[in-house]
Figure (cartoon, rainbow, N blue to C red):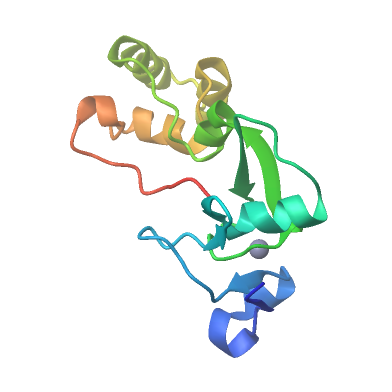
Length: 148
Ligand SMILES: [Zn+2]
């Protein structure tokens, strides 16, 4: 498996402290580490997980908890459902009506943390709703987060 431990001068001090396994093999067009298998290709993180931890159930995804998509250390991955993944990345979609209600709650003084809990979004998304930066207010806006 073509990965190496994060090296301070290349990846920054934090990478060393968190023990990331930085992939240097093939990546897809989004920069996600991939490797070939006999039936096509899979992400390198999945391959490492399946080798060291076990099979990944259908409908489950590996979220990079260290925030580095090039990291394939299974200890830095959490097995989550698609919805959970969207929630943690702050890309859970609210309908315009619900987002409007959430915004009104923010106007009424409800904390971002509480809005996040009540409406099932991340605190970051709640903050964006409060500032009317949520996609419902501007359909062109895209969230920068990607899976894996
Ligand atoms: Zn990592």
